[in-house]
Amino acid sequence: MVWFIAKYTNDPYEAVGDNFASNTSVNAYPNPASGGVNIVYELPVDLKEAKLAVFNVLGNKVLEMPLNSVSGLEELNISGLNNGMYFYSVMINNNLYGTKKLIVKN
Figure 1 (cartoon, one colour):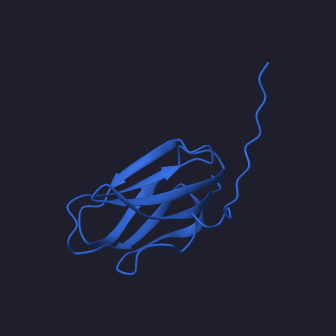
Figure 2 (cartoon, one colour):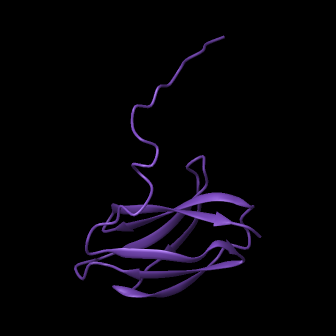
Figure 3 (cartoon, rainbow, N blue to C red):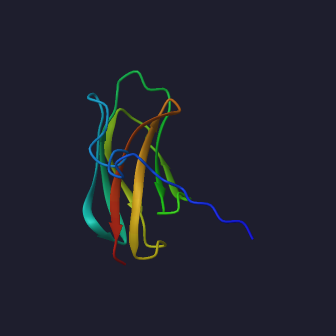
């Protein structure tokens, strides 16, 4: 049997929160959400590709949605997700631009 201890020295909230780049804004409402969540976003004008990904607390991607313009409002269907805490991240031109928390209460 093998045992190991992992020690994290970073603040757990350092990677989650309002850490989007200054020219990027993404918000989900309502939050907590049930059935569907509205994603309001404004992205840099030089984007080639953008997508929003939702991850469970284990880091597994459970949903993904393309963001096809520099700003807009999209509805994301979350009815297939179990109740709990998730994280949504925005990738622009294959770079992570930020991560926020989403609570699902179906």
